[in-house]
Length: 310
Image (cartoon, rainbow, N blue to C red):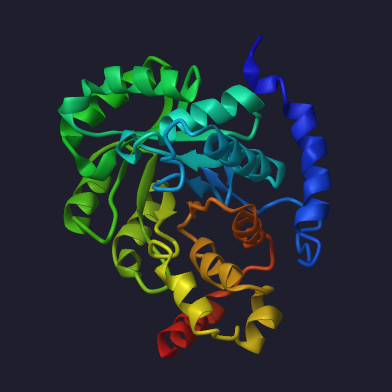
């Protein structure tokens, strides 16, 4: 039996209940009670809020922590989530995902995103096969070259695997604003489906060249470090900074998570942001940011100016 369908109906039912219980004080802006989606690869769609696993899912084999992360994954899907991103560089995160999916089955909405990196981990095909076993999946939706490591060799191999139907999409990643010039050159010269880069309200370098180029070439964009490793949201909460009153009226923001994530995913070039968390409360805040309304271009500039003034 294909596990992807074993829990589909139950997850939908759970989602209806969790949406009511996990978001009791949060207004639902989308009439369909669903996360907003953006298109990629022509006419396919992804929810604008995904989930990262860096640090948060590197919990080894501790049974309590494994079950806690499984609850996070189940809630993520129940609230409409799709893309989950991991890497062999994230310690036990791929194994933790495998544990969760073994428990939950594979929901229809799962968009599995992994990475390959250095030769020390084997060839690209060997790494993908190993990661499929660790995730307990037969095929990844996306495999990316982690931080451009040996990207020529890896992209060539991934392109062959895609042509053979072994993986669905291929891409490249960078973080912390590194190697943007090389990133741009690859985007211009190579046939790729996705890019992943750092983009948030205080790190906007990608707006200059990479995001316009992605729009021009029809490349989907995943934003990593949406909270800059947690420092952005921790900073405003630690200082007890109030949300500006206009934020709720102009784009439905009721939390700082709304403010920071809506700024990112409202950019026309962005497909999905991947905040990471270990807490259900924080997860539901992240997911709520994916509901409409979204800020306009003028409101986005107002948001950036306001945050810079804090």
